[in-house]
Image 1 (cartoon, one colour):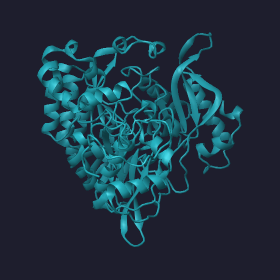
Image 2: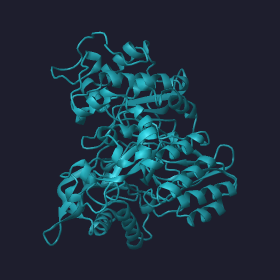
Image 3: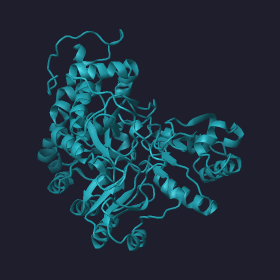
Image 4: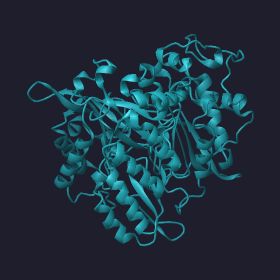
Length: 563
């Protein structure tokens, strides 16, 4: 295959069933839904010109609706939710009724890597133009809120001046490439994947031949299994080949939302230098063969599910790579999951210190103070993790840093609840959300720290504002999907459907699986701390021994124990 999207692709053998899925490789070039029409009309990346030349000068009211609700996403911009609109109206109001005249702006931070100049720039932008907001996402991004379109060109200029961008942070394109936050310093790492991530982002982020994919495209490259590799469209994980040595094991077809699917091993082995080539080959395959008829079936996971990995690999190697990849072994997983919280020795004898904010929520002021603390302790680098945490690298004397971070709202010795709770943006800013999440997660953490003090626990709680699973509802020990439920007084109120016992294969002997859903198992938001305390105490009383995990217990627990 060439590296361009052909205007009229050559005819190929039909590879799917009788239903027309709008696949370019099969000659289906006419758009089959509104989103595809918008992308065909103009490369969404070109909207930047209008932001800089028109919208920033004439304000929100001047923005074309197709740009506002579609193309701006390719530059990290989503309108945020208008304050005061309750969750019951999320699905019934028109977009123009839901949206405010302010934006969320997502900064892509590939591999979670920030030097101090970049960190200070992000902090300054937060304070100047985003009312101090700076949330860490579970894909190693930073999200600002309250951004005005008038300020976006200057924000772009400041970010790009220090090597950051918002290019394709959202949209139907290659999103941020997730990587290990301790790449290059971990004593357990055999290969540093950073060069592959750098080559991918330098060569193909912003490439117009890849800016019109069927849907969002999430990828990851890491030697260590400290990333959620099973829920990416494409992921590369470290693996040692018996003949070729250290390399990477590719996985394809993962994703969550309302139809979750775990990625599968391709069964191949990829050398570090070849990771970018395989990455772009899979991306082009998705571009050409991905489904474009129904937006709800446009993720890569549907193609992999229909084809199977054997056929997927056959097309990848035969039509795109033009060579066969060696077969390879699966990765070797560690004895315990890696989240890098606390103090850890690096391979060079220095230390990295991982710390947890509350559910990913920070501020520009806190990030500026973090930069000063890192510099004062000899560090010039920090990392964001795909679990909404922060890691400071290259620390010579970590003990004093632990205490200093606490004063900034970053806890390097957190309770298990603070360590293991994530939350999406929620109804505060998100137009899709039904319930509030960030403050609710903070309240939950505080209550559980008080009620279950002294208990040694490892229970992951993911709080989601809607069914889209941005905070990974289905793969948490306790996954909470926001919805309206009936309260004690019979009225509709904010609450959650509960998923129990989900998880990813991040340690030896673990299998990735989705959480158990019991019929009618819901809780109101007000009763959430009571419910989590109750099910946790049932686990402590009913587990076989201290080694039985919460997820393992939920498989055999009775419905009464899980209520």
